[in-house]
Amino acid sequence: MKNFHQSYQNQIKRSVGERVFDGFNIIFMILMSVVMLYPFWYILIYSFNKGEDAARGGIWFWPRAFTTANYAYVLSYPDLHTAALVTVARCLAGPLLSVAICLMAAFALSKRFLPGRRAIIFFLMGPMFIGGTVVSNYIVIAKMHLLNNFLVYILPGAFGYFTAVIMRSFIDGLPNDLQDSAMLDGAGYWTVFWRIIVPLTKPCIAAFLFFSVVSNWLDLQANLLYVTKRSLYTLQYIMYMVISSTEANNIINVNSTNAGAIITQLNQSHSIPTPQVVQMAIMVVVTFPILLVYPFFQKYFVKGMLTGAVKE
Image (tube, rainbow, N blue to C red; front, side, top):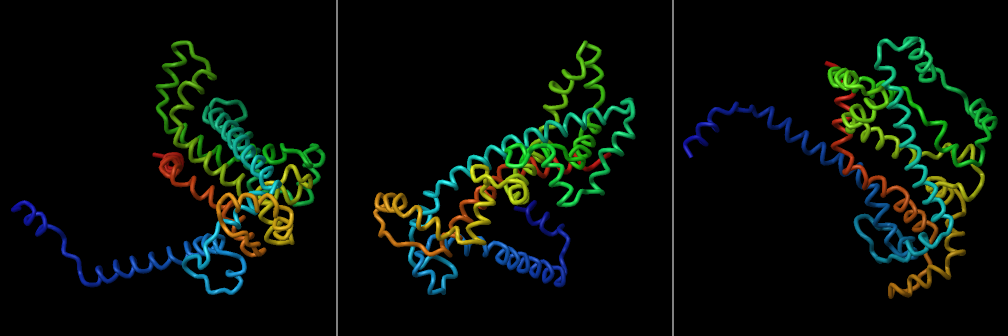
């Protein structure tokens, strides 16, 4: 008890101004958190409300007439199933290929004896500052026969110079003795890469895998410009169609039979949803999964970015 009082007395006394400033910061951050999180909460509660009741307005904090029928209609939409498979396949293949190429490039560029290293770096850095226009990019994609091709989601973004630079900085921070001792024992560059570089760069790999997954999940431009085949639509494009066109009415009309069977199994009243609640439900289905993934990658994200960006 005596030690507690002594440590308490040794603490630096804070002025009234500092306490007021801290209190203001806490209140301000709480308000900012509410402002940023409330739109997501509003979309969620609106999607769980009956359509005819939601049309009356006045829904702010919780559903007034709770129902899961809206999701029965959305999840019965066949195009949503196909789009989910395409999006998941894209989010698996694209990030893995991108991170693999960038990591191999970073390993090669970390070798200062690489012939033409400066010229290669200058060549790879150019597209960061000089990008193509929409028309020129479309011509390149068309010449590569990637229109209405699944590879249009993967190949154009397979290499990112910024990612390679951060990974190179990470590799430069590793002890060179590890690589030198392995090569003295007879290991080649490929063995050094797989047995030493890849295991030691796991935090950096996880961070950029998360970056790439989010980028692929949220991308709409590729589908909007280069894909017209319905079987290659992504979830973002399905959501775009539902929000910006009459696709919500098509979901309601086409899936009435399937959704009605599901609603009956749930022992709920079969109420026809409105386009507004269908739009809210599909936003939840498309957007919320990627939000739930972030907490699992957060520790790798912070560690990977700091260790890869800070050079001692």
